[in-house]
Amino acid sequence: MRWILWIVGGLVLLVALMAGVGALLPVRHHGTRKARYRVAPDALYAVLAGPPDWRTGVKSFGVLPEQDGRRQWWEEDTHRQRITYELVEGKPPERLAVRIAGRGLPFGGTWTFQIAPLADGGSELRIDEDGEIYNVIFRFMARFFFGYTASIDGYLRDLGAKFGEAVSIEA
Image 1 (tube, rainbow, N blue to C red):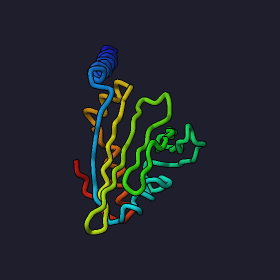
Image 2: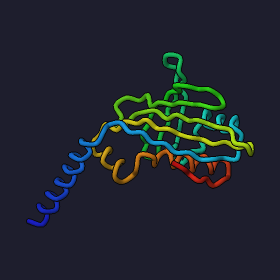
Image 3: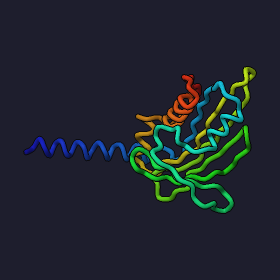
Image 4: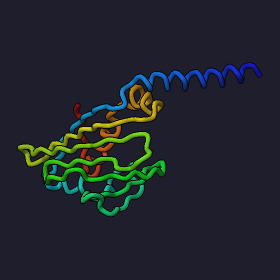
């Protein structure tokens, strides 16, 4: 019976330690990654601005009414969490900015997509994330286990798969 108390006590202590360290970490973070694709900037922009049906983490999506003149949509992830997004800036074919518009989430922020043409006719895509993690446990996990750019890395890989090419991700 005592060993059960020791295990439960150890788990409580571990979670408390994670929360304490997470509380000391900044809420805001910045991450950036880039990759090159063998498609023209117009084609790349069209996929980024279009439906997210090519992304492995998106199970369903839908369009919402505009809010303050901004396009909005929702995406449901593999954990059945529905997140609302809004288009903050759209400047085809070179720049796109998207913000999490949903409320009450443990995270938020914006992704800015910058597309640069390459001499060979392809494109370089740079994604900058200016994120916020409100939950202290998630903040701890993002900093020490997942990394702040894990979502960007997955996005860039999915985009490569959409175009049938392997990508090399750079910082």
